[in-house]
Each structure stands twice: as structure tokens, then as C-alpha cells.
Length: 393
Image (cartoon, rainbow, N blue to C red; front, side, top):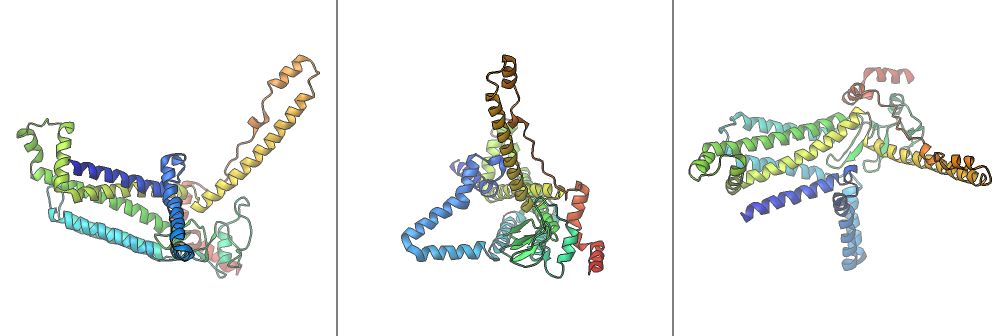
């Protein structure tokens, strides 16, 4: 029984660490221990390690760590791509080794062996397609094309020149310091893809997330059906109820069934838990990016809007505070006036309460149908924009 509790605790700790690392900065976790774990995993642990290396090995050790950081984080490298291929390859290997011997089974036919192989192959192809596709690189040859495709909103985007590329910077573009190029409709630089996610490959990135989510759900369900088939073939429920007198109910049978599965098929159980956790994370990522696509917003623009709205809110609060101060000063001047005037001044609404609410005005949001169409068929790939560019030339 101790083994089962160890596996359960291991799964819960793994889930907490993975969720904290990947999702700890989400607004829902602000002020919680998940956010603190995220900070420790992403900044605190590295900072303490760097100090420890500096104290033990001196400046040479610190410089060596910083060099590794520069290679891994500040320049294109295939490390995470190799890790992805290793994860999906190792996971599929263990699935084949532990579960394929039970297929065909009571609930699954042999066709699922081939379906799973094709599903994994398609997932890898989507990964490679996203990794090596052009995200929408802005160059001197096509900059006029992107300038016509994406007008400036003069709120978070205004006419300016890229200080690195020395070309006009189209609205919604950003110069990626890692790839060292300007990318149209820049969303983010994805380390797993070793590529930027931009105007031309957002559709491939979304397909990658959705397919891998479905792949994890399929794997979890398939392994679950394999285990259910083993329960049926060995007549475990029948034996427990007839020979051992266990009550034929979920609460009565569940502990004994779980104990039997963990003792006989612990590898399959661990694979199910792993795939279920990954599917939840992928669902979160896909849902977040789907919301961005449906509102025609990018991850980069999300941060820009946060900064802009925060700045505007501070300005309005400052104006409201100035108005409140002026009202207070005016109140001091009516001390000698009749009591009715003083009471009216006392119950007057504070100008701070009248401060206008700052509203996000996204001119690129033209309805979720049009926004989705723009993601699937990027503006720069449409013949109409190409004709406009040739006329401009």
C-alpha cells in the first residue's frame, strides 16, 4: 500500500511543479503559493545557484554559467526541440512496450496500433512545420506590403523605424532579439519551436497545440480502455464481489481495483497520469491562444495593452486626485458660509469616484469570424494585398 501512496504523492507533486512552472504567472494565481513556486523555479533557484557558484568557483564559474544562459536563452538553439522529440519518442516507446501487447483487447481493435502511429507522426510533422516555417519576416522587399496590410492605431502602435533593421516598422510587428529579425503580427518567440510565432505560422502553431491536446486525450483514453479490458478479461470485479464479498459499488470496489491495477500495471497508470496532466496544460495553452486569435490580439499586444491601460489609469487617477484636492481647498473657503452650504459640500461626491474607466479600443478586432479567417488565411498571403503592393511599386 505504501507504493500506491508514493505514486499518488509523486503525481500530485509533479502536477504542482509543472502547473506552477508553466502557469504560475497567470492572473488567477496572483498572490498564491503557485505564483511563489513559479518565481522560485524561474528566477529564485537560478539566482541562488548563480550566487553559490560565484562563492565556490569565483568569477570563472559565474562567467561559465552566464555563457550557458546566453546560449540557451539569448540565441537560437535546438535544445528544446531535441527535448520535445525525446519526450514524445520516449512516451510513445513506453506506450508501445507496455500496452501494445494487449491490443487487440476487449475494447480496442488492432487498428489502434496504426492509428496511434499515424497520430504521433502527424504531431511531429506539425512540430517541424511550425519550427521551420516563415513566421512573417519583414524585409526591405516586403515592408511596404506589411505597412499596407496593418495600419497604425496610434495607441500602442505608431509610425517608427526599427532601430536594428533600419526599415519602417509595420504595426503589430516586433524585432525579435533572439532571431534578430522583424516579424509581422508578432506573437512570441517559442523556445520549443526555436522559431518566432507570427503572422504566417500562427495557424500551424494552433494546429500543433490542438493536435497534441487531442493526442494526449486519445492516449489517456486508449490506455484506460486497455486497463478496463484487462479487468474484464480477468473478471476482477466478479472475483472481488463473489469470492471476497466486496460490496458491488464504486466506493466499495474502487480501492481494491486501484490496488490491483497499481500492482500489475503501474507503468500504464503513470503514462495515463502523465498524458492527462499534459493534456490539461495543452488545453490551457490552446484556450489562451484561441481567445487571442478570436479577439485578434497577440501575446505581445496583451502586454502592450496592459502597459498602456495602466499608464492611462494612472493619468486619470492623477487628474482625479488633483480635482479632489481642488475641491478640498474650495471646501476650506466656505467655512464661514451658512450651514446648508457646508452640508452640501460635505456630501458632495468625490472627484476620485468620477474618474473615467479606461477602455481597451482594439481596432484590429473585427469580429471573431473575421479574426479567425485572418489567422487561417493571413493578410500577406492574399492575392488582393499582393496586387496592392504591385500597384504601389
